Length: 363
Ligand code: SF4
Picture 1 (cartoon, rainbow, N blue to C red):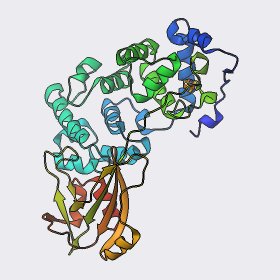
Picture 2: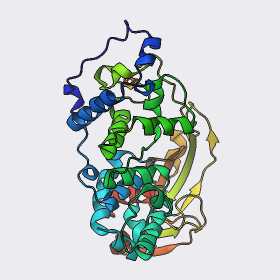
Picture 3: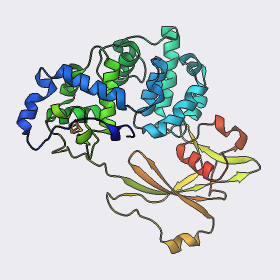
Picture 4: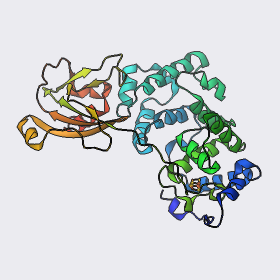
């Protein structure tokens, strides 16, 4: 957003231009496309955020960033991206690593299925493609964990294929530009018809950047928008974005540290979340779904009675907000493994466990 403040763009006054007229000017309606593309790309060249994966056309690095950015904020990805790339600098290094080592490097990013698929895909690239990424989106989509979006992102950015991407940001931008709801099929068609054939990778990233920084879900910054004059809605009727109901849960964890070891428990290999990862022993409190209401919790007086309580953390996983009470003592009936603290960096631990161990000065 630093650069946007200085955007030298001339906004089109929305008050004097009825929506019907603007719909006619929409780039999708015909002649405006070249100017639309130019305006967007010029803005992108001047105002894009300085992100490490934008300085490369290496398909491995682009793929890594795209997988990490799925359902994870840019700020949370930056450091993980750097460290992961340091540890596994190319697809062969990733393919040769054990699953445990890959999960350990992924720790803190969540959605661990992504890390497993990443390694599986790397192995397939090495075994079937001699360690080289296929150069078109169709062949990329045949690889494990690479869907239409990721294949088009890699193919357009690394290999200049004219393949459009559609993510949540781009879908929102297109619907606002057009001024009506679009089916998934129509959205992909619009994205493809808008795409620049001379700079497809930059155009795709420019659309994503516009959605992430200007055409944001709740308060689009239409006054700074480089494509405002082609936009049917111009923020007049921003589409309400549904807020998912959050589930609130209260759990207890034991941080039991003895003689340079810490007690951890491995999650079941078939768990739907974080399968096979290691975590502190934990046990549950009742949960309930209460959108907009206060979480079920003990009173302060009740908490004070729990003498072993060390700290309370907040932690969110997908649509669940956890209140996590940590005791520094043995867990009731915990069965786990005593892991040497010096070896923790090689163990795939959950993000919550990482947070607690850091707070305790253990890692
Ligand atoms: S920021 Fe405003 S003007 Fe630009 S595309 Fe979004 S709604 Fe339209």
